Image (spheres, one colour):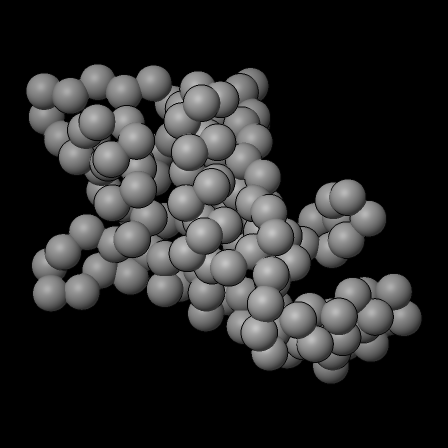
Length: 144
């Protein structure tokens, strides 16, 4: 049996920069350290809602994430799926949003490199950091 590995782009969402989510994030960190599933579940459910909102299309318009990709890559992009993960990064448990090459549809007549170059990844991460009000967002690519 063969397994296909494809290029991916992952955004790691750092801690909230302000607001009521700081306390929930801190409880999540404690829940991860202490193995408290209830504390973990609350933050991960919240982050699932955040991720879904980034990919939600309204009234036939591109999703916020599609708009970012389209602007940075200078081509109309449609994203058909993503994977939500959790990872330890910089000493914190954070949410990862992973987009694979096969989940990106590019309008006919346009060619884009995937994953995007570091300058494009940084622009996307900065946008997400502002929109989601995070202390930082880190973008990384995996190219098999």
